Image (cartoon, rainbow, N blue to C red; front, side):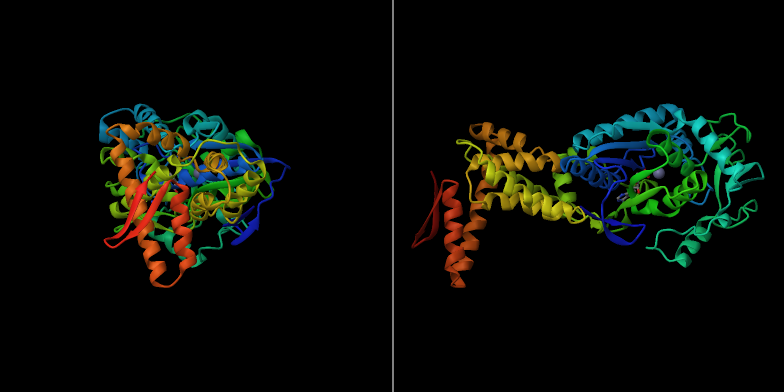
Length: 475
Ligand code: AMP
Ligand code: ZN
């Protein structure tokens, strides 16, 4: 499999350290609010990646943290702990907020068919690991104490800005803009590992430590939680592109300095879901959630389908119109699957051949938009409906769109009132095909016109050209 690696800025062949096994780490949510559908775009893509690794035979061990302490409102170590902000907003304790939004996150994931990683670890349950890692960094001379806080000393590194996608200058500006002058820092890119001093005295969660009573920085969480469960080496680390700097840059600095060797070979970054106003973000306050999509009548899986239609390394623009288009296409797809003939036997040769449609797409830097095309290509295969259904079910092990279940529902409800929706989709599909055939005939492309007629016939739809225009009959 070929994957774009932010570290090398190349599409690299993915080769895990240990044959057949993948260790995978994912930055989890900061649970001070609902996840928005932008966050969930990242988790959908990471879910596809994990499932595809499994599909091609890897044994995957995947770990995700839950950030319930230490993520400040600014990346530059200033501002309030986001969790405390959430607690104040809702007049609850930080732990109540964390529990509520962690549960809400996993409930959203379930609706979107995002598999829960087998290990999900809240930061607050790993304080001992953070302290140990910080102590190692102090002992090795990579960290220093100043003004009560413990900082990482970025000047001790040969190379701090490891992700080539950003120019050092840009990053420095980024740091400068967000950091209110912190006189304790030796270098402007230094970052906090442990806070004892905060301008917000009401920080609710604090722990005793050799460095004083306080709380961990956000970056140390991921380094420590990853090594707790996956050891000193990682195959792949995932997150949204906004995490690349400073969060992932700082994770690499901490882990490699503590372990004394290279840490993670592949970095997988999902680009943003944007609205007309720019990146969707929790801090902007106005954002879309899975519940809102449901309230507006969308199946959350139509949103998953929408995400799959575009490549993870491109920004994706959300609009209701774009989602509508995706939802219509998704419903039509289900309708077409519902019309496949279930009789007969699966042809094992065609089945194996057909699987290549999916692997060709996903081996190519997880190209989910080609994987969606592969679903449509299944209909065109020269084989029976049973084999096509088996292939669609097989692809759905990775794509997780509930294709077969929804098609079954569509079939069952044919004679019931809900069938209207299903029929409407069928009609619009037929009309589209008739239009495409008319266009082909106009261009004297009779081969395509015949192909369309035969494709419809295969589904039991007969086309008749009459004086009043093209008519059809469903057998
Ligand atoms: P957070 O809960 O803010 O820590 O973010 C959780 C994940 O969502 C991180 O991997 C972020 O990089 C990612 N993320 C944040 N905003 C967006 C967005 N608009 N589109 C895609 N991913 C995002
Ligand atoms: Zn992280």
